[in-house]
Structure formats: structure tokens, C-alpha cells
Image (cartoon, rainbow, N blue to C red; front, side):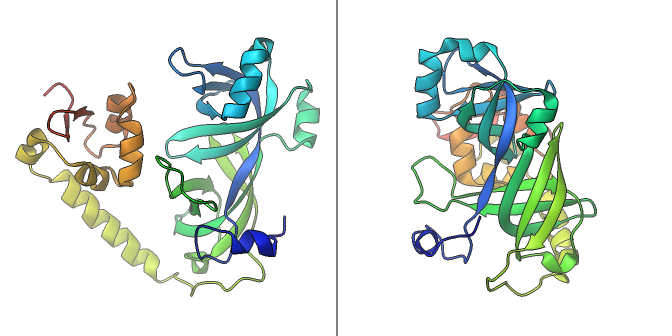
Length: 268
């Protein structure tokens, strides 16, 4: 899809592209008992992936609960850190596996800035195109599998990927045409790895006393190598301790202390 001049002029950022991460997935949505808009999508290949639905979809599903019993095709926005499908539209027509492939199910279009290149994977940075809504992240990353040139680091690229299990495999990859590209950043790859290793070592060696006394939200965000807004979003969830344990470099589960406004190791 070609970005219109109107779209480019109404963005919440100054980058010369419209960021995009969208596609289709087939599955059955199972809402949680606590929040109908949050639940699990059981995909056509039997993965159970955390999912969120829009308010409009919530209204449709509550009025038509039979939809919750059958696999349908969903238009969605994927996240990989942590895994999540944000479901925004549905198509009720049942299809066989060949029909689904023809309709582009499990095929996704990603347009963003190349943030990291490893031997067999690429991490793409995406930003919100619209004004930031309170509680939402301004940016996030997707990690996809495949290879592109090292010179692409920092540049704007357009990818077509196919979901296979929870692998996101690159089908096509090209620089976004007709935009001013940042300078190639290939030589920075070695420095990036060195800096990342130093940060990890510093985090792992953090004082045990400091951990027991509690960390501020900003300090925990640095430790888990993510934004403070991501911590704020997850700390109110019942799954926060297990989620934080999976992200922590030492496997520590965290809990939020409302009294001290700090994060402490779980059960301390």
C-alpha cells in the first residue's frame, strides 16, 4: 500500500514512513474470566497465544457468542515481545486450509526501521503513527527470522513474512522506496554487541542489597531491557511475577509493592 500525502502529514512522528505490522490469522478466541477483551487465541495450528480484542469486536462477540466456538479469520496486529495478537476485525466464512492460504492467512506485512541484525534474525522497530493513547507504548519491536545485509541496520525496510508456529519467516525484504534513508550503520554491529554484553554484565552483577530494598520502575525497566511504560502496563496483571521472571536476566520474579511504590523479588 502506498502512503498517501495526508497520512504522512498526520503522523505522531517525523519519520518519512507509515509504520505497519498487520496480517491475518485463523483461530478460536477464548476470553478470560476477568476481562472479556483479553484472552487467548487458539490458532489453526494449535498454538495458544495471548490475545486482545477491540471494543467493537467485543460488542460483536457478546451479541453473537456462537462465534467463540468456531475458528474464524481475524485481521490482527502481532507482537513478539511478549507474544500477543491484537485482534481488530473478523471474517466469519469457514474455509479449508488451501482457501486460508489463498486469502493470506498467516501472512503479514511489516514496515519499520531495522533495529538489530543477527545471523538468522532481524529486529524491526515500529512506532505508533497516531497520537499516543494513555497507557499505550509509543514504540515496540518485532523479531523475524531471515537474513538481510548488514548495511540495512538503521534503515527503513518493508517485509513480507509468514507465521509458522511462532517463527516469523521472511518471504521478501526490501528497503522502503522513495524515502530518505538514514546512513548505513553496518560497522556499528560489533559495537552494539559489545555494549549489549556490558549492559547485561552490569545488570547481572547488580547489588543483592539493592534488589531486596526494591527497584524503581525505571530501574526495573533498565534491568529487564524494556521501556518503563511496558512495566507499568504489566505490573497490574496477575501474571506479572511469572512474566517478569521470564524477562529477568537472573530469572527473578518481581512483584509491585503499592506501599513503597517499588518492585521487589517475589515472596521477599
